[in-house]
Length: 490
Image 1 (cartoon, helix red, strand yellow):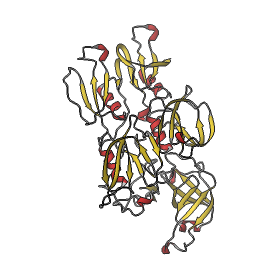
Image 2: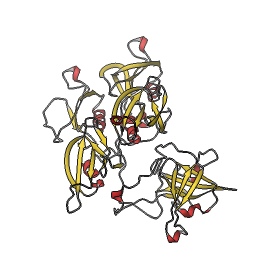
Image 3: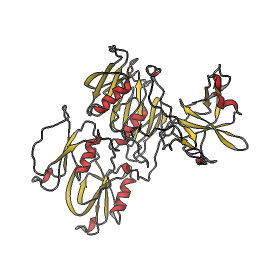
Image 4: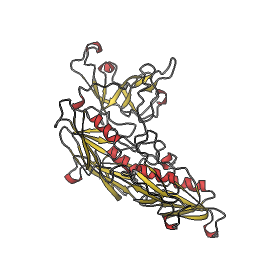
């Protein structure tokens, strides 16, 4: 694939986020004889993960950052003086600095990059004009040298947009708009992540595994519209819809860490190996740079050592060619673009560490409102209407408030939204906590919309029921230090 980028660093970013690019070659504006090839970024793949090196004056080559253990970001704050990054000019306004032009681009739904003609521009009619632009690929269609012009990219991926961040997932709703592309995904959250990083996608609709048309089950439709909003909201059973998170003022990794039981991700077979457990299969996929997703067969053709088949796969767009629900199989994605890696060297029990927004989105605070309001217990979201908690927490009066998506108890005030409890189901054998069976379910008075800070806990599959883990996380509200404020710790 060939794109145009203003410098070699941005060429490497594009290669990193492209599903199959492993290596790149960039032709800069100087030292290249053919002017039509200047600013060209060649994205390359190789079955051997290497390519022969051929000498070419001025050319710069390198590797994708997919395998690097550093935080990867698509943010580019660079300003390119004397360049016109060409694309579809869909909005032209008068601004009095390139900073104002870039801010306008960042706050516009469609804008991917801009060109600003300064007050010294040779044509008086274009001076102080701000050109907002986009292309199908999200990169310039061409780049030319142009005196007194300044170009740059939207800072949405730098989390600086001032437009609304819409986290809600709308259940049983189909958004209508212009379809850009369709891929198969295991759930609506993967669909939303793909929409966030796919050029021009503003919102999406996902058809669940219960969708009426069998060939469209697990289909993720990436969409856009001229207004930036869905044209209509249509009631559809087993459809879920939402918005790109590109405008949000915090980072969302371009990876999918969850695994999916009873699911087979189909794609181009890269390799079949034998490993012990689906987590090991995921790690092998992560370590193989061309692997994009995997399927683990825990019940078929296992060795005497307990190692089973691990299928390493890929596709041209990074998503499975099809998703089939098959008993016993476990599938998931490579973790190579995940921005956080667990640090097992500093794991502590005493004290804890402050949690970040969305890190533990299933954790809730269970509070009772009497003459005063206080936190009694934590709980975990297991569905849109049910909370799992300890049975001993339910001994008090049934005047509950369930708060989700908070990090510090001090954040809660009278305006903070909450859920009420409609019913409580306690384990029939529970008497006191010391004798066991200390478990209960709370039914909410209304269903919740799942977001990145409010969604169900990842429950283990049957295959994981007896797995012994070296490390685990304990989360809840407590004190990080003596006389500290009550906060959510991990």
